[in-house]
Image 1 (cartoon, helix red, strand yellow):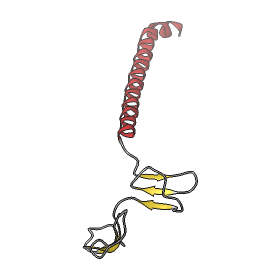
Image 2: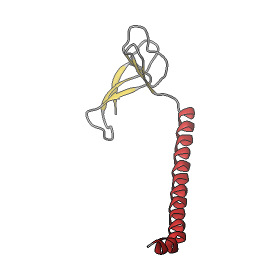
Image 3: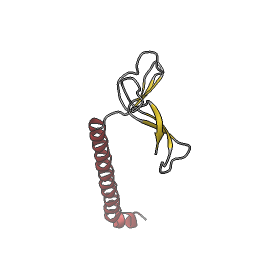
Length: 113
């Protein structure tokens, strides 16, 4: 029995070495993919500009990253439309993002479409 074990020992060692080598190569490949994903995600995070932000005090802003105006819990920066479904808009309620007073030619509330 010992003779058989001694005879096959080099093959067993070689097989174990191959398996461990393949495992190391697979681990390196997985690590490279993870590092690549982390780098791409980090670059996207650095380059992107927050357009939806939730503050610790419960305030919420869309379209900007600054704190909402005093007294507002929700602020939307820019023109806003409101629709029932997520399809192409032909007609919808619209609030214009104006900083000044409403006039007859530039109302704050109007219809899109």
